[in-house]
Length: 84
Image (cartoon, rainbow, N blue to C red; front, top):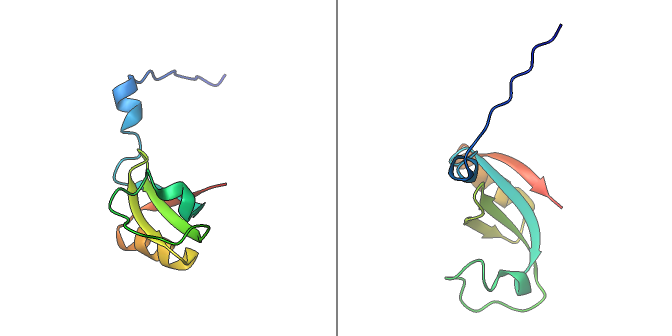
């Protein structure tokens, strides 16, 4: 017989799950970024970019190339997941 154990997490614990070790990579348009990257500055509308976000949704980096965004994650020892 297999024994399963339920683990209960608080909202605060869940919010910090993966913090410092997991990041997600997502293809975005420059139009989507206005509210997410407050220090972005001026950017042409309609550009296709790659954004790397921390597990809690905080922006880490922005790149015009997927491989550069992944390299940034590797430099920071982050495990990446792709969001479609």
